[in-house]
Amino acid sequence: AYCRSRQLLWRTDSSNLKTDYRRNRIRLSIMPQLKDLMQADVSRQICRSAEILAGEADFIRSQAESLWSCLVQEEGDALLLDIDHFHDLHLALKRQVIRLILEKKRGLTGISFDHVEVLIKVIDCWQVGTNYVLPGGLLVKKDYRQVSFGYGGQDTATPGLTSVIPVR
Image 1: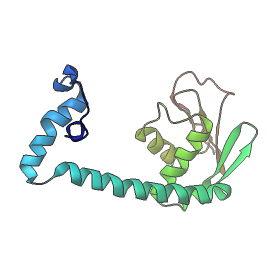
Image 2: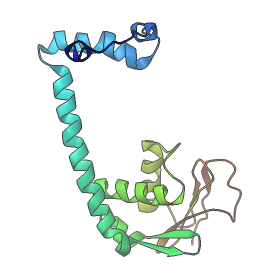
Image 3: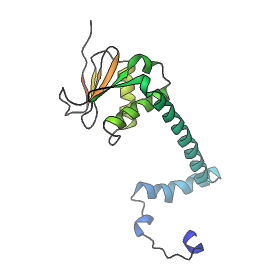
């Protein structure tokens, strides 16, 4: 309709008509079913929800950025997160602070929601001496008052929990 209204030529890519790809299955099968079930303009509702969530995500990010200097210190190549201040944060802010640290240290490629959730548990619940390696070799080490995010020092070839050192 857009192209017709502007007298533009277009091409139809035959792959857009196949349900082999997830985006096409959603567009060709799931969205029409949702529209029938809900008797509503589902696309509009999804777009509106996405707009609301984007605005709230922007707000949470700005709040996390404003807390940065109270929470995070740079020491050499590492970022150090203050555990006491982190504990006091709302879960949404905790997630965003972790994401900001990861963006600064290694980028978010290969980082999932689950990685962020594990890091929150490392910081909030796991014992001092816990080490966790993220994809890309970023080493997260929990100390008494801080958690460091940096590279090197230990074998960081395999992502995941590398060690827990009990403190007596």
